[in-house]
Image (cartoon, rainbow, N blue to C red; front, side, top):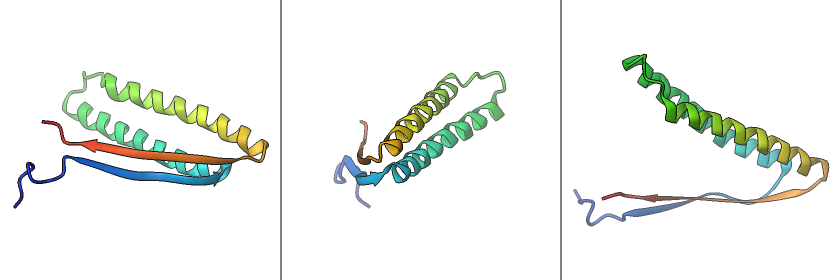
Amino acid sequence: METLEKVKKTQKIDLISGCYSASEASHIINAVLNVKINFHKLHRLSIKEGNEADACQFDSGRIEELMNEQDIAKQFFSQARLEGKKLKMKSTIHIEIED
């Protein structure tokens, strides 16, 4: 089995790349945001099970931020839809192994 020294220490994933209608772009972005929101909700729940007194400030704050971004995106996509515009999107995930 290879050690981490011999394995790549970075990974790049081209997640979203292309031109989309406002409806398509809205669907993609909402799906990604919903997955992240649900991740933090489940993480918060698992922490609460072990310690009901934990406020889970990071997860709760992150959920609020993501939901706010979802509202902003909804307005953005509505405007693009009204104007009949296409949307160009790019999203690359960069992953690094920390020492």
